[in-house]
Each structure stands twice: as C-alpha cells, then as structure tokens.
Image (cartoon, rainbow, N blue to C red; front, side, top):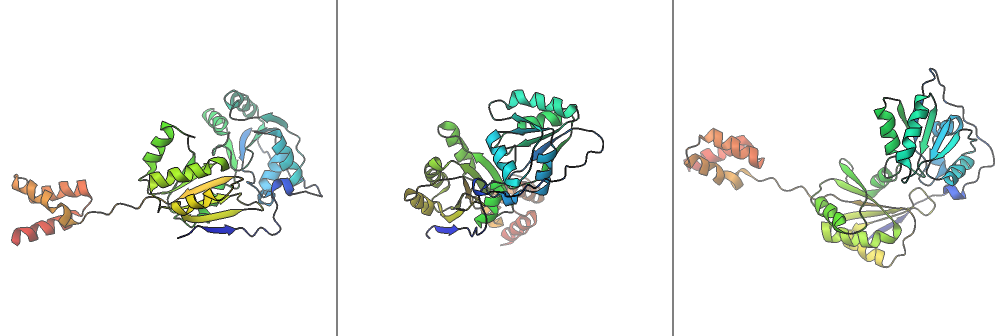
Length: 313
C-alpha cells in the first residue's frame, strides 16, 4: 500500500493571518445575573476564523480580564472577528502560569469574569490553562468552557481510524529514556493514539513509531488542519516513513496511529490441560473450571463441557 495524500477543499476559507474583516461585529455580552465571577476557558479556532463561536465573540467583548499566551495572537483574533475587547489583558504561558494562577483566582473570587485563551484550540490540552483551571476549581469557584475546535479530535475524525476508543498522548519527549519508555508502553495499546509533533521532528517520530509499533501499523499525518493548505496523508508507517523522506514538512502536525490488534482469546481446548491437571491433583471439577476461566478469560461453561467430554472419551 502507498501513502494516500488528500488536500482539503478549502474554497472560501482563510487562515487567521489571511482573513481581514471590513466590518465590526460587536457581540452582545453574556448576561450576569448574580455578580459571581468565573473562569471561562475559551476554545479558539485552530486555523480558520470562521470556526469561532458566537459565545467566544461575546466573551471577548465582555470579559473583565483576558489571559492569553501571546498578546499579538489576541489582537489578530479580535481584529479578525471584528470584536472590540475592553478587558485587562494578562499574559499566561508555560513559564509564568504557576504565579499567574493565584492572580486569576483572586480575580474570579472578586466577581470578575476571566477569559483564558490559548493561541489556538482548547486551553489545558497541550497548552497553558490547566494550572489556572485547577486552582480556580480547588478554590470552589466557577469554571466554565466555551467549546471550540480541537486539533486532536479534528485529526481523529479525519483519520479513518477507529474512533470508539482513543488516547491523546500529546507531545512525546524529544529523545532519551523517557521517550523510549513511553513508546514501549504504547506498543500494546489497543486504542487509537493521537500525538502532536513539530514539523522538523515528524520524520524521526514516524521512524520511531515504525520501530516500536511495527511498520505495517496504519497511521495518518494531518497537517495545517482547517487552513488553506490542509493536508491528510494516510498509509502504513512504512509508507509514511518513505513519504516523509521526500517531503519538506511545514505547519502544525497531528499524528494519528492505529491501536494494536487485540490479542486472540484462547479457546477451551487451549487451557483444558490446566483444568485436568487441577482435577488430577484433587480439586473438584467445577472449582478447577472456575479458577482457570478466571485466569484465562475462557467461558467457565465451555471449560466444564470440554472437561466432561475429555473424561468420557
């Protein structure tokens, strides 16, 4: 099988940096009925500003405080949505969120609405926000979420791989024993796995996946989701390793990997000898069947019937 490359049909859609708004849209602020403050975790577009919700617009317009990773991203977002922000802007990123969280807790306790945003997607999911959300929740103060786009779930839906059960693994350690341990621990993971990766490490990560999970395991590379140059490449890990060697990867990357096949359940005949050995040692047949069934996962009834058939043969 060869890697299948699919370019998104994004006619009429624009990435945030390319979208210009010629009119101002001022969303009505959310109604406050009791003066209670709250922390609002706001999901922001991962590429296409048209994915922004009306609730996000309203929160941007009405929040007393807006906590962001990068003030430039906030200006781009607000301008693209045609929303005027009047709240105080605070920088909240990986390097200062421990200290910043106390300030945000105080603001919520004082009755203010604090809107916390990451640069793209949902705060707390491989982005800053968890420390503040945890601190506000532990202070028994209100925390709410404005749902929004998620690169992980978008990639999962696009992947064509099983979606009933999945695990989000975020970014792997760049190298060393921690990375090796994580990959070994995931080798037998049966759920679909979702990873974030930087473009310049994607080739090495796909090669590591092929070694850890087997080169025939199915996987998908999702690039620049919801943007003009969205791209989805499907194939076996061997296919993707070959593809990436000839490709200069740019943009935001999500990797989705098929889970390991479930081990085949043993049949009654496979563990019948264990039952017979227990009976030979003096254990009652029903008790021996129950014990072996609990250990092996084989039906106790099937074991009992097989043992009776073996006795009578």
